[in-house]
Structures are given as structure tokens and as C-alpha cells.
Image 1 (cartoon, rainbow, N blue to C red):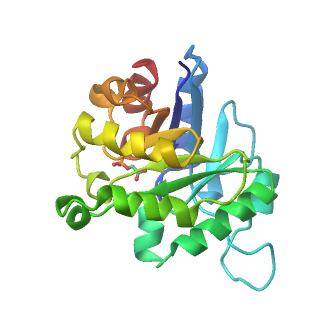
Image 2 (cartoon, rainbow, N blue to C red):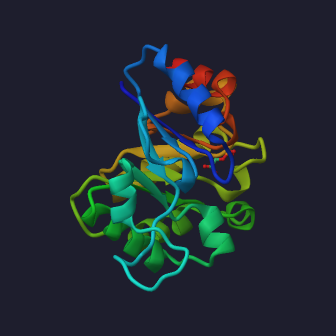
Image 3 (cartoon, rainbow, N blue to C red):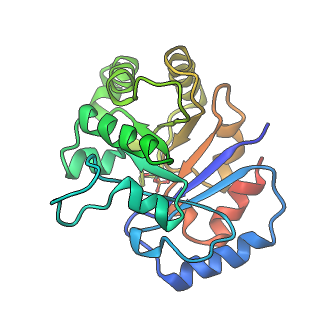
Length: 226
Ligand code: PGA
């Protein structure tokens, strides 16, 4: 099964790092779909692999200083855009409604949105995970048959080295599968040593990788694990 392996560089990276990654990936033979989402400033130019952005505006164009539109991203060569990452939801107060508007804007401009959902530690500990995820999916996903990808990223697993048990991932993805036919990614502390097990889990169509996507030595083992 072909898997989707997407790297989210967050606010990290230089042109040199991206060129190093491109050069390293050029030698890799894989059927998997590899996507790198570097910062806005590194989009554009020739890229041997598919690139995506990490956010887009919910608006089409106009007086929105500092924002970048889906149309601009498309023109820069991006094919995907992450929307609703928990860091956007948390630090920029993005609601499900905003996330859906961004996803709709992405689709209208030829981009595939990677829509992120995930519960906090408190919600996980109080057994609310499925309810939270269901609500986020119902409210953040556009009402369309178009191409979208959904990423389950438990907030408490991002950048912490903690991951849910495979039983928990299975349970959440099984529930997500009843809500959407979209490819389902898992994200949060994915690395070479756990990628195969995670991607071998039922209804996990790929991974969204943060820290371990920055360097070829960390990212390539994930790609080669499946
Ligand atoms: P991480 O981040 O792999 O560094 O935990 C994942 C993400 O935030 O997409």
C-alpha cells in the first residue's frame, strides 16, 4: 500500500537545508507519496518532490496584511496546504469554522488541504478523544467530495516523544473512517523507529512528521520503513 509521508517543517529551515533534503530524496526509490511543507519563503523554485504550505488565508484576496492566499500558494508551486494544525488553533485562536473556510479556499484554488484534528492531554485523559475528534471533523471538513486529507495529531504527542498506543491510534482512526473517506494520517512524534508500526495500523494511510522531517538522516528512515 502506498503511504503518504508529509513533513511539516514549521518555522524551521533554510534554502540550504531544503536543497540538502531535495538532493537526499532524489536518490530514494519509493512508491510512497512524499510531501515537504517548508515555510512560505522556501516555496517556489524548482523542487524535485511535491511541496505544500503550512497555512493559508481564509480569504481570497484583499486587505489582510501578512496573510498568504491559497491562490498565491498554488502559483508558487505548492500542491498541498496544512490547515488547522494545533499550533495554529492554539496560538492563533483558529476555530473549526476558520479551519473549514481555509480548507474550502484551498480546494477552490487547486490545493489539497491536509486538515489537522487532535485532542489535548486533558481531553485524552478524561476519555473525550473520540467526541472531540468527531466534532472537529464535522466542523472543520468542507462539505464536498473533493480531495482532502485528514491528519490525526494528538496535541500531547506533538514534539513530546510521546505517542498513543497502537490500540488508541486504531480506535481513533477507525472512528474517523466512519466520518470521512479521506486518506487519514497520524502525526505526533513519528520517527524512524515507530513509523512502520504506526503506518501498519489499520486505517492509517500515512504520517505527518514534524521534527524528524528536517534532516535526511531522520526523514529517510521513515520513508524507507514502509
Ligand atoms: P512532531 O510534530 O513530529 O515534531 O511531533 C508533528 C506535527 O506537529 O505535525
